[in-house]
Image (cartoon, rainbow, N blue to C red; front, top):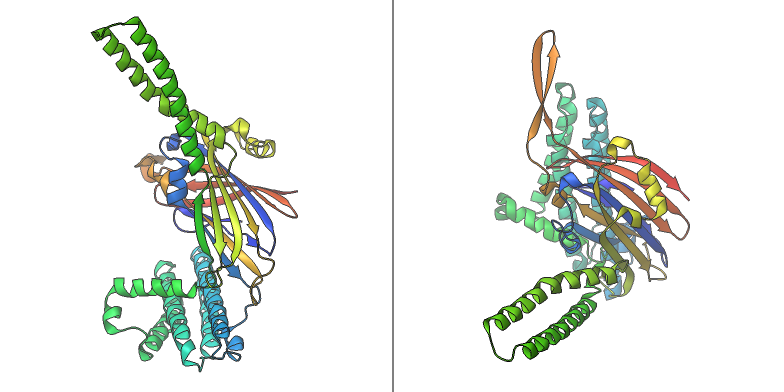
Length: 451
């Protein structure tokens, strides 16, 4: 359920059905030596800069644009219907290609790698043929089709070039590499013949990349839901701050009035006392406010996401987010037991960070062609890696009176317990995430249990 995304990020991708509810809790055990704590990384900073949540329509049985295009007329609703089905098809093809390319690059065996690469190439050719077999006749729909065809061709070509560049190389598989390169060249020639992109755009790497990013956003229209974010406790925080300030000011005024009664004239001693009183007020006001605020918001959601259909503007789902540092004794007993099963050497002093997501799907049913919603929760560990110590160590070996050495990198481990709850089940999993300053080295599933 938890899998690596980019170098320093991982994702969780559960599915949601109409009128369903789902809760996900994650408990991070962060070793103190990593230097992560409320002072170096606040909850708000992590949420704003290193966490993302997406919601998109998903279909197990894709309704291809070709089928829908037969019924396209000048009616605006049907035109939009075609665009949504086209976008859904291209969106899911892109996700599938990205996932398969990543999985293929993990294959170390050369024979298995090229066998899988050729299979991906054949599948990609088939998907592109299905898209191009049914070019719409309506001029109003041509631009939608052109954008989708242009982007999908370019993205697939870039994916296979990445595969060839980062994959293993062997002279025994020159034919397979040549076939993959020919496929990339054919897609490049295809776009050139149709004049999808101008020569000036093609000659500038930044321009062509930015154009494709724009096309990517266009094919997500109607598929990826619009998200509105709201910080839930902003007014409550102002109220708490105002109340604390009022109470402290009242106490300070009482002390000041008593001091004025004791000193009938303005003296140096009176000035020093008044200065000390106001100084103490400034020192303790922030600390008292922080303590009271944490006590009030403990256990309360901090953010709310509302997801709406980008076309109809209908509210589809509502998500609440919790994120806070906590103590081990405040973690639920079931989760503490899972953490306690770690080996003794792994039980080091740690900070505990709790994340929770609770989502409810408001829609009774989705648009025709959509079976479910695909949720994506993305967590970046870049903020964690930034605090890691630099440098590599040396490991020495003695072999037949000869001393050899090799470089070893400094690695750190996070333990994460994931709790997944829906209408039917509760599932617990524990993962061990190994990372260095540049990437997540591995994500291992250590424990899994379902209730």
